[in-house]
Every structure is written in structure tokens, then in C-alpha cells.
Image (cartoon, rainbow, N blue to C red):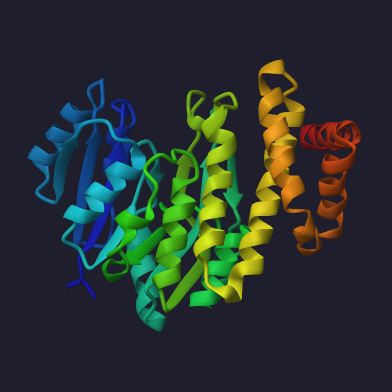
Length: 328
């Protein structure tokens, strides 16, 4: 097994402070045949210099420099220059446990899978750690099951960083990706790779640590991309998916429209009025698909279409109760 090379692509943009921690965790991997490709995406801080220093000291680290093109561009550039039999991704401000890639590769070999993946944990700025989900269960997925699980978003989430992909899955990916999408681009890339995989294996352990910073994307205000890019991603998947999973893809679109409208209902600033109107119009166009939703979500979707003021009251009450429960 050690003869197979794993290439890990690390898109890096203005992560000077955190990149050493990420690279140290990669260098600590117990799997020996590891290639690390740091793609500096036009950083304006000292990211490039940090990566250069690491590359000078470690022969398995290579620095690739490009003008700022976004995380999708950086990932595609790294995957295109990778020499490994397998390709993984890691964000430049996260860290992983030492045995992550060995475990993923062993699992892939156990059933000749094209994708091996796992769960993750989140470290919050206050030091709290949440596990997603860490049940220890193992799930084998044929092509359709893998795509359905990804669309469902329950046990298996959309991050690229918790997955190891056979390199043969990547041809055609660059043409599939929409470079204008900056939010949920990992979901879109994942769907393409899962659609090409004959078999995947998932072990619900959490060796990948996603480190949430106060200035990270999760703390940004709502904007055009954060609301509408995820919707565009699901429209693209719905348009191109095989007939066997079309209902799953449409259900994923409907759930995302509901989520987007809920976000905009909590944030009642006038600047979001147009966003709310656009999402509501999209949802009304999909009314004949409400039967695919759960009973609760059908009620919420119909409230948005017929009585948005009532949805707002109901959803705000739900959020208040949820927050109160979180505090106890």
C-alpha cells in the first residue's frame, strides 16, 4: 500500500498565521508516501514566504503560485499538477490527526473504493469542539447511494477536505465546475466526483479538524453569493443528474430554498428585501415538488408561498426556542 502516492492539495490565501499548523499536521502523517502541494492563490500577506520556507526544508512539499482566482481555481490547479494515485484536499488554516490519510487509504483498499471519506470536528473560537458525527459506523456506497447521501446532507457532508479521491475520477472536472460560484463550490465538485465513482466507503470518525475563526466565511454577512450560489449549485446538479436521483436532487434544491429564505427572515434589513422576493419566487415555481419534502417542511414551504408573515413569526419562535435550549 505504501507504494501508492497521496497528493494533498492545500489552497492558501492569506493564511500566513495558520499555514504552519496545517503543514505540520500533514508532515506528521503516519502514511509515508505523501505529496503536499500548496497553491498560493495570490496572497497579500506572508503566505507564500511561509510555504517557500517549508518547501525548502521538506522535499515532499511543493509550492505553486498563481494570481488570485479563488479556491476552486486553486484546487483545480493543484489537482492538475498532482502526481499521486490519490488526491485529497486540506484548507490552509485547519489541521488533521496523524493517522487520517493512512486510515482513509486502508478503508479504500478494504473494498476497492474510488472514494474514502470520514467525518470532521469543529473547533470554535471559544475553544469548544463539536463532532460531526463520530458514530464510528462504516457505510459502503455504490454510485447512486453515494450521490443520494451527498444530496441528503445528513450523515455525509459536502466538504472536500474529509475525502480521499482516486485520481482517475478527475478528468472532465474542470469543464464541470462553474468558476463564478464562490460558495458551495465544494458541494458541486463533490457531486461530480461521486457521480464518477463506482464505490465509496465512509467511516464516521472525525480526524479532520475544521478551525472556525471569527473572521472566517461562516461569520460574514449575507450577500448575493452566500444566498444564491448554493441555489445555483443545486440547479446545476438537478439539470445534469441521472434520472434515478432526480427526485433526490430536487428535494435538495427545495430544502436549500427553504434554508435561504429562513436566513433572510431572521435578517430583516431592508437590503435583503429583494433577496427574499427572489427566493420566494423560486420556491413558488417549485410548488409541484413540495410533495417530496417532509411534512414539516411542506408546511413551511406553503407558508412562505401564501403567508410569508406567518412563516416569519413561526420561524422566529423556533429559533428563539432553539437558542434557549442551546444555552442550557
